[in-house]
Length: 375
Image: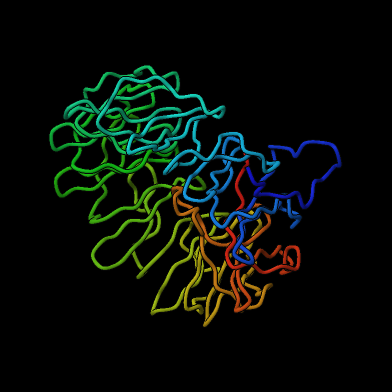
């Protein structure tokens, strides 16, 4: 078989590339490569199509068939499949001759009971449908929960929404009911809070009890950085806590969640930032604004995007486009800086800048996906 990959750089000669590192999938000269967070090219391939690494493997296309390569660019699973999905929980869905099945990272097929539809693994389980009922499949190929649910949504933070009749609740990955199905709608599980809807009422779940929020007509999911989330009352938006109390009155046209103690908020078509007391700490002056990262920087926009610090000082000029990339598949994925790097775009292409505004590796790419753990 013709070799379809070459080494470009390894951190230590003769030592295998560490699976612990974060990598970005980059596209240049119609070929796919992978860089690390120092901007070093870890692997340059001859493939025109490939995926990001997960569980130490990445999907790659040779001819019209897909297989999986390791971080040395070697085929671990030969390109024998018509379609493949990324590995999650040590398993991936693959299709061959119109038939889907699971394989492990050695390419061995997982023995499971036949089903009319196969679902991706997530949080260590996959949905398993039999007739009109849904259960949960474990990574050993055995049912964790027999099909008994009408509907189960995707797992986030170890929990998923499930439906019983016309009502919704939450279960964990063991299929245990965490919140009984007695709500017309329910939010995604978060340890900082969960919202729910009963009839026309909207409220939160606190200590196993439902507490209605006075006047609320819409509410958003709680985030991981605050016990406040935003809710709508009339035509305005404010913030409530996980006890259902209005902490910041609904005085804003639009808002985003709190991060690093500040939240973007819009008044009179201009964005600024408020603290958890509702005080305006960065003036309403921007055309658009996103949340602060752990690095203490937030994207703000006039015609293009730049970055400010928590005092409101512009520290990186407004000369970029920004995007969350495929991280939008992750719940509450944020734009801007993640672990010291931000994915940005100019006329030259996509790249990453550090918190000093310096271009990573002095290189622009046709596309570059956000960094993610290779394993």
